[in-house]
Image 1 (cartoon, rainbow, N blue to C red):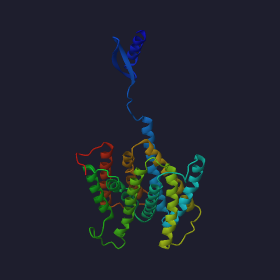
Image 2: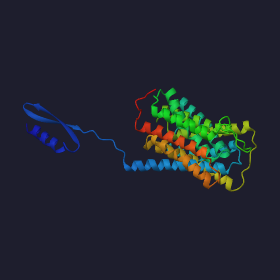
Image 3: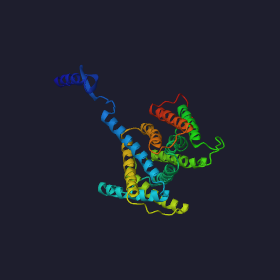
Image 4: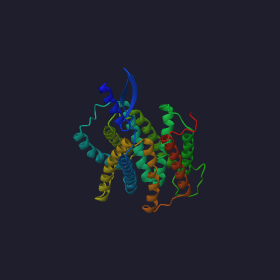
Length: 344
């Protein structure tokens, strides 16, 4: 009986601290059964700081690549991709070697193949758009990808569409139209105006980026992110070679030293962006990451005006605002599980 009393006292001691208890009677004595109290899951301030820092770095590296591609627009798109991807691989291979990451033995090879193929189209679209379109317009159209990710998720992953998601997609579509300005809706007399169909290139990039998000959700954490990144860069170099051949562009010997150093810098930025993004996703939900990536578009328009002295049209700003608002609605509804009672 004294042992039972000791247990009872110990339970009362820890009852308000780390345990919860159930009382039962045995031979007329009250016995307290100790159980581990549920631990509330909280995210530490440090993890929040890491997540914000990583995604901020990702944004800066992404826009920096666009700026450098804009400066090097005289170098053909295919050649630019080939050189920068080779530079990235030279950085990746020591990382793979020293960390013992397998590039041969890994699961879900078919899904990885799909993601890599989609990423090649994204890479080609991004570089061409940055080189040939206003930086702000290209960035805004490319980062309309959450709209397409939502559509693909409904079709292939059977994810339900909510009313906020439908509203955000409508905003995104109108935003794309305002930026692309198709001539059948916005006739223009300017002789030097860029053909509206050029804007289809970043839109194709956005569609494929949405597809990569969908495939990645299926892959989850089943494959090392470095393995996927290496194959993405390698396949992009082959895609650049194919684009260069089909377009019949002549290869240019980049002048010393600035262009060569800038392309080396793009290769390093590509590696850093991929690693920072994947690390940021390990700290925070993808919805939050997608929300923060809207800053790419804002920063790109600021650079377009400040660095390249390019005029920003009112319609482009309005379209960008719609895309940002639509993406905010989309990511917030996922983050806080808001459906407004509508599921389609």
